[in-house]
Amino acid sequence: MSSSSSRWGALAVLCAVIFLDALDVSMVGVALPAIQHDLGLSTSSLQWVVSGYVLGYGGLLLLGGRTADLLGRRRVFLVALGVFAVASLLGGVVDDGGLLIAARFIKGVAAAFTAPAALSIITTTFPEGPERNRALSIFTACGASGYSLGLVLSGLLTEIGWRWTLLMPVPVAIIALVAALKVLPRGRDERAEGGHDLIGAVLITASMLLLVFTVVQAPEAGWVSLQTIGSLVGVAVLLGLFVFAELRMRHPLVRLGILRSGHIVRANLGLLILMGSYVAFQFVAMQYFQNLLGWSALGTALAFLPAGVLVAVTSTKMGDFADRFGTGKLIVIGSAALAGGYAIFLGIDRTPSLGGMVIPGMILMGIAFALSFPSLNIQATSGVHDDEQGLASGLLNTSGQVGGAIVLAVVTAVLTSGGGETLSIGSLRSAIVVSLVLALVGLAIAATGLRARKAAVVEDENVQVYETV
Image (cartoon, rainbow, N blue to C red; front, side, top):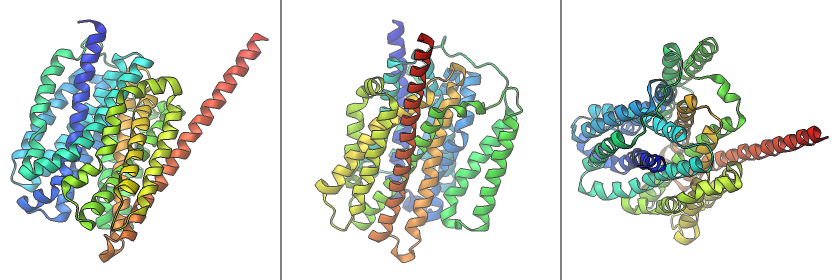
């Protein structure tokens, strides 16, 4: 098998796993009412079926990314994928709510190691440039397509039995694991030099876990409650200690100098806003379609399908677009499309128009993901040395997960602030405004990137003229 064939074979396996991760996240949402009924869970306990996964994923992503750099990306990926398969099986067979939540947490932890390991395997296997851009665009498109397909599959499988939504990933994970053993490159799975920063690992993991836990619990405990304020203070203290420790470590878990790169910071902020605003919007749309309009779970899932189809169809072209136009321009256009999609949905009422609101809004959001998601991944890992690709990948994934948890908590607070009017058109519109405002902020941040790049080009041209003279 040629070197090129080996690389693309490895990419196929990595795409299957990210597709599976995204599929698993979206599939459980529609099955929640059935899970609650069968296991006798309270509403507050039910949220932890979702939040438990987010807690494990968002809290350990940085550690997962750096572990892949230090212990070997291939090894970390394979072990974590095996744990993911076992946790999936456990979640599908348990009859206790606590055990189900524990299984979901373990799956989140496993995904926190597979996701950055997979992304860093791609960025260290494919050379920076057109080939890597194409690989990353296909990889990220598979994640977005898996999320959209998961919504549809969950509607179908829940009709058979909610356990199938949790068991379906098991055979797929096993097949991917067997294939990965054969096709993932060994020679390129180099380890970074340096020791293990246990102090930094404990501090950043504790701070991320506490942050995600705080924002998930805030709507129920109250944003100004002693519990929430105390937890946020705890997060600030832990992050301060982490920065203090990293500045003094010989081999830090996170080399803080990586954040001096403006394009990396903008990429992380961009994904935080993209994922945060969309996860929140999706939650609001689910409430609108199902609880206010009375749509079926499958009908609601199909409403989101245009965005997923658009991403899947255009996936192979995004790398070429990035090469031709640059990631900065694509992110600006994507951010504008995202804001436009949210703005269209401000017109929600009790008789929504499929052709005038639902489909156009979803298409714009599909355009936003098709352009922005792969571009942000390319931007966040460009110019980063191979021994820090896991770190860069972990930072990016953490931004997306933490953004989703924080914005969803804010939107939940907006929806529940009206008490008995929780599902009124007015409260739903207010919640969508949160996503719209964030999208506009993302557009402004993306625009600063274009100005920074233009200034850099002008400076470079001036230097060349001076040297010529």
